[in-house]
Length: 281
Ligand code: SIN
Image 1 (tube, rainbow, N blue to C red):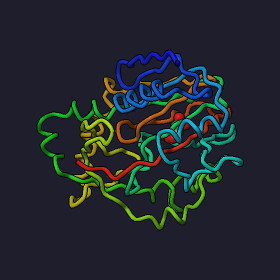
Image 2: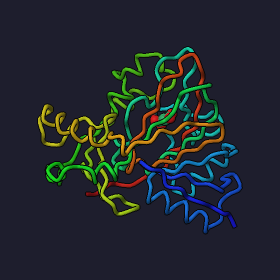
Image 3: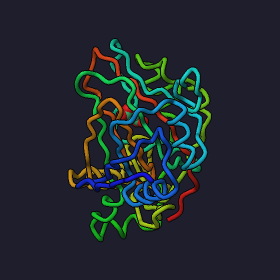
Image 4: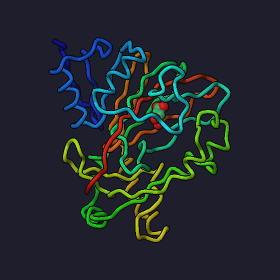
């Protein structure tokens, strides 16, 4: 039997101790991890020695793996997307607040990131909690967003007109013309979270491009107000990676942002994304 402890963190997320993921979790331990994931939306594990096949096996316990359409894939395991930055590159992947796959009709459940090669310093990842962000909205803002839907797109991030495609990170992104062909989608601005049943703010600076039925300027103003609440320090945590660290976040309950402060060094992470479902209010 695995002796697990789950330590909630002050702002968002929890650290799971006492689990060696490579050995597989028994049903009871896995149930506790699954429940903690639903409750906190973000789990950290330290000191893991996960082979690629262990990473895949753990992810598959949560659902079907989404083979990434845009990122370079691991040469032997296409289920693993490579999130890498080389010493000579300046751009990174995920260097701004976002939540993965909100541009899909059925946004991904979550992503599991394993540190494979870290710079000597820097390269931390920031996370923000969207349950707390919703709870912290003023009554007036809660009333304003009730029933609204936001528009999400991938064109400006992965398409042929995206900065990354024209910059030095182009080798990491493929299928840019497929991103051009994606149609924009809408989701409720506030969702009823499919695992926890709680309300969470579901807009993000990376992929949300407007509010359905609103003119661009008022939409921008409203999103700006929501983003200011979401990034309040009370809902934000910074994760310092170490060899063997694993982070598993729920894309419907958190945002993340990969800090790009380690130019001249290599950082390689393996990411597996798990498929989700349509989101309701
Ligand atoms: C991502 O946005 O998925 C990358 C996060 C990171 O590299 O820390």
